[in-house]
Image (tube, rainbow, N blue to C red; front, side):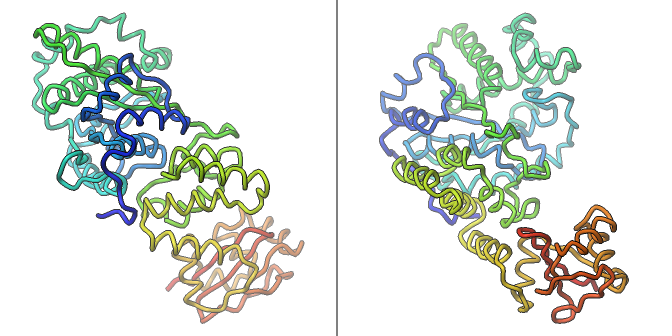
Length: 437
């Protein structure tokens, strides 16, 4: 899969400009001492981020570390995406309140392939200097024996050291298995392995990963020190992103995750997620999830302050991130469907109705639902929580079907082209229905 937005690679202000950019974008939480000086040397550096392949898709929460790798590559560094085919069998307790379900090797391997395709939308994997790499920790953890692991790795960590980590502390009262407790050591081993075999000097991740990242630094220090080495290693943490309204970033209004896979979250729904960003959040999202320069972002923020109803900033954000994730054609269709769905025009063209149905996720109905009348049809299709609620809304004049306001709940609507219904509920909700069969 090739990105429809060219992935920049190579010096842009050089590596010494990498931290400065993260700072002005408001992303940087902290680094270990010495990283700024290391980057200022201008010497190439490799950095990795871990991705959990527990699902067959990444979601918008993963865009924070993805854009971190993207910006590192643009400034001349080499991004390394580590997928946890090995640790995915165990699970990271960080940010979780319960034990995760464990997946089999075949499922994880299939997920890894799909994640690679999504990362290619953002990172340049073309062979050459600074080319992005993707590695799977199952390749080295899969053959690791328990005795060797305890002897060579476990001896470097004390129980008090591990218990002091926030990712462990938050789970002690609710229960934490030894399996998940050991995750910290495996992630530390990942860093040490990449440092030793590929010269990876930097691990990046969210602030909630700081404990696991620094455990890797500790292991590298102890192993390198024992071997008489002085190879450097560094850590960088991103801020944790929360919405101004207090909602968890990355969740739709219904509480569902917003995925990068179009079969899980359609490009239309993906576009709508960003288009509906709160005015108070859109400036942050423009900094974190676009490559727009500072001047352009500040101009969009100023326009939002002057005329928020135009949602110019949200439109620019939604279009850019949708095109990067799904391609220009999918973004253009999402925009067209969005404009059509929220227009006041009544649709009679089956091609337009089909596009809206497929892009925005319509409802289906059968002949029995149709002849039962509008109220029953809309309730059975899930557009209302009950038939009574449908009847009350119709009686109040809040439902329009195929451009005509419905006042009789028992009305059997006439279909467009024998299969379509264009339903408007209230001022902003529009649903496209298709007759099954």
